[in-house]
Length: 418
Image (cartoon, rainbow, N blue to C red; front, top):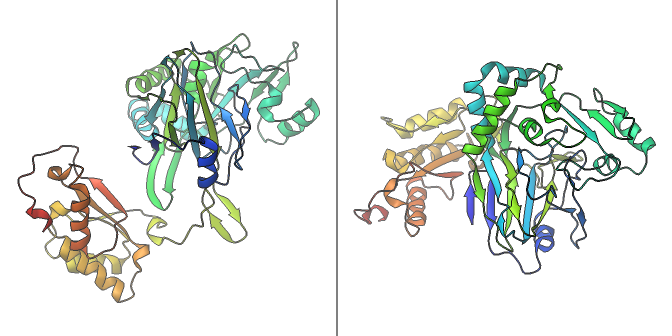
């Protein structure tokens, strides 16, 4: 298993019966691929999900970085991919942290970033009446909007405020989307506080990849107020993504899940046959008075993650950590940053347990972070180090266990664990 922050994991090998069996046991809610530009085919499976081929753009063409369906109002939260047949060469799925891209754009092009935040983006695309397999954006308007006739299509388009469309003389359909948010704040993810801005859009994908006999990529995207975007800025962002990407090399049977809110993906060009299947899962779904997350799990009231100010209280170099953490909880803090290297986890734990015992707070309302020190990165030492932190804190679990520094150092003694 490989871990990509909170945004990606991959498993190898996968179950013998493939993707559908795995998905049947994991997720029950799914998104349909409405509004996407990529040509795809629906794959029949036994599970209660929709599985598509991944983007079937011609193999010699790069599919640029994007958040899946970011050009629609409600993009999916998760993507699952399954490799049935890897390509002979290339064909890697490349990934990049969307928060990293946002920070680059915000620091390098602050005026551009502010316009994206304020106005969002509009996307222009001309869709054919039949799928064009020679184009990376050749999906027909029937398939794209999942209708069978033009009357139903126009009704669907007319129901979207701000969207513009017109029929072309050759029977194609030009669509200019309503303004779509292009910079998104991700606050929570499965009861984890994220609070990160993301470059959540398909702006670069449109600028780089929306080119065929019907479309001019230079005219494919603008700000939500119809102002043109600086092409040099878009090119610079595209180059930054390419320089900082991580490419995942597929093997048969691989499956990985992608957090579409935090991670952008692309596809490298390739040679030889390639079969990768995909499925998409949705956003928060309400069921009666029960609030559920994007995979149907009931969301509980974790007050530590719902405060308007997500400030974390740090425990480094405190003179009287037991009293200080107790007073901090009394004052309303619910998120605490600790570490074995701070040398005060026993006293920190006493303050936390005292607040819990007195009924000031419940354990599930707290979000406790601790950290792995540099000398204990070896696989056999990690669980021992975590057990020591839990023992010192006097807790059954922590909410987050981080690597303190990405630097491994030689172990001098294992007495640390005693």
